[in-house]
Length: 109
Image (cartoon, rainbow, N blue to C red; front, side, top):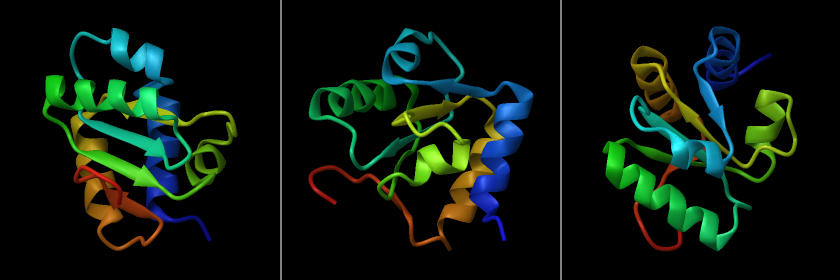
């Protein structure tokens, strides 16, 4: 059975409301409502995501190892941004009850 987050991420893919990869996320000028990254993301990429988080004032979620790539059916994806407000809030609400997703609060989680 699919989790709610996997379903919502599928909706984002279908609607074209996802941005894949740190470089593409950094180049966005507006409209990012949620950042999600894999815990295996590199240190420099994490710094870039933290700057983006401050720029857009959006939540930053950590997915357990390999979960994000599996949910998106793209194993190489380590970071993604959701550009739809309603889907982002639905994912944030669903993440409260799913143990494989945590919210980044600074430092080592």
